Length: 104
Image (cartoon, rainbow, N blue to C red):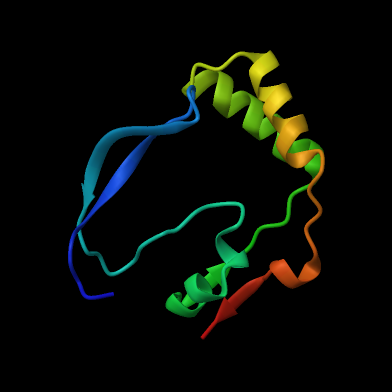
């Protein structure tokens, strides 16, 4: 917000924790913030000029996650399935946490 560069922590997806390293992100006219719960936080939403939520069927979300995690994050099929069941097997997203395309 102040036009300053920030150091963003790097995450180790195989170990499910930060690595201790960071990468510099410089100010830019457009910043894309991605995450399953990024629109659930009212303070974050207030900082955004444009918000986009793309609704996808649960089976497609899982397939994309499985392919990404096994190809790009060197995870096993078993670890992806186990984490998905533990995390999303009990989640329900209400319509109040969703947004289509919103511009403020």
